[in-house]
Image (cartoon, rainbow, N blue to C red; front, side, top):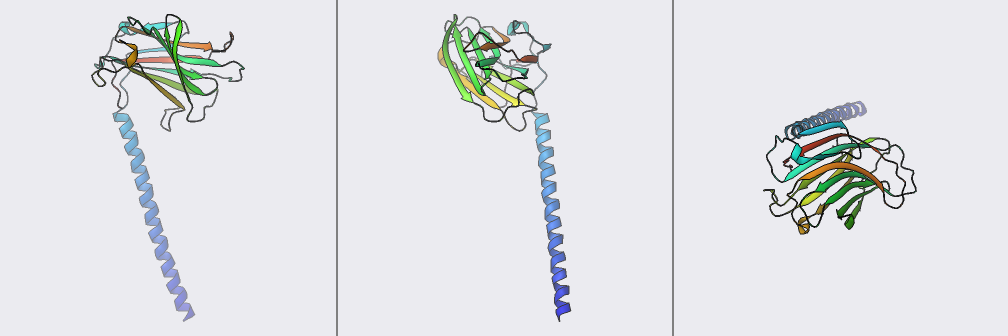
Length: 233
C-alpha cells in the first residue's frame, strides 16, 4: 500500500513538472515575441537619416537651418542630436553644457541654451540681448556615469507647425546607450508666450561655468540635424 502511494506521488510530481515546463516554455515564447515586436517596432518607426551630420563639432561653430537641405516635410520643427562625453565631474564650480539655439527675428528671445549641469540637473536658459530672461531646472531621473558617452537630443517646434499650431516648444532628452532603458534627464519649455520663433535658427554647442570663470569643457561629436522633423509623440 505504501509502495502504491509512492508511485502515485511520483506520477503527480511528474505531472506537475510537465505543466511547469510547459508554462516556462510559454513564458519564454511570449518574452521572445515581445522582444521581437519591440525590435520590429523600433525599426519601423526609427528616425529617417538626418539631413545634416558632422563627426566633430567645436564650441565656436554654428550651423544655420537655412543652409540645410531637408528630406522631411513637416515645417516649423527640427531635431538635433549630439554625443556628449565628460571624463571628470569633480569641479567646485557649477558647469552647464549642451546645445545652443540662436533665434533670428524675435524681439523677446535671441538665444536658448539647453542641456545639463555637472550637479546632475537638466537646465534651460532663455536669453535676449545678453540678458538672462528665464531659467528652468529639473533633477535627473536616473544615474549618469561620467566618462561614458551619452546622447543629447533637442526637439523644437514653433507656431507654424501643423501638429501644434499656435504653440512653440523646446524639449531635451539626455540618455545613455540607445535610450531603450529610459532617459537620464529630460526637460521642456513652452515658448509660446515669447513671440514668433519661425525665423531662421542656428545650432551649436556650448560649455560654460555658472558661478566662476573656470570651465572644463566636455567632448561633443556626431552632431546630427533633422530639419522639418515630425516627432512620433
